[in-house]
Image 1 (cartoon, rainbow, N blue to C red):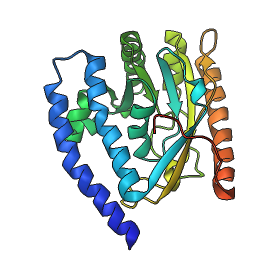
Image 2 (image 1 turned 90 degrees about the horizontal axis):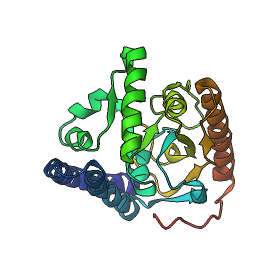
Image 3 (image 1 turned 45 degrees about the vertical axis):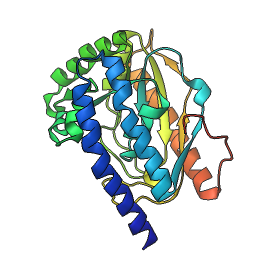
Length: 251
């Protein structure tokens, strides 16, 4: 009963905050893209704080020292809506490669459109890959970090989807660094789940992978191997007790 109550309070805060920040995002349209993104990211800071206050849901970071000082392509596990908020608090301004249908959601989609996303038609095949590459290069040159979920959709804990090559293709054709990221957010905040369970999410950042000189398939396989191996390690530690790492200041 308490989890239902806490999750309901979180949902209420989300319903109140999202329209407000969506309007702010639209008003911020004349500002430079990076400035606009930093303003919009405050919504994520608020919602993660609200999740901690209402649901007892926090997070810790392993490997924060691996975050480079220049824009990267982030290849990450996707289990929950949580990481779409947390990445905006952990990394410099990010843009997402995502399905274009999300932009049609009232308020949320309007605000999302102001973050300079790469919105693709998943059924477009090679045209979508070309769009990710062309727009991804432009975003990286602007100073954005590009987030790609290689599996394309949220997967349940313990499940592995097919790793699509788009993010690796962008990295090899732009010379960008790839940053692999694993986490267990799905253990606490499931796919399309209303209930948010208390606890501490572990997010692990791998060592940067230099894409120069690599083929997209090779790079994709290397990132996949690290992410999936790290997912297993996080799962073992989650079941066996806390990791004991010091929380990152971004929390």
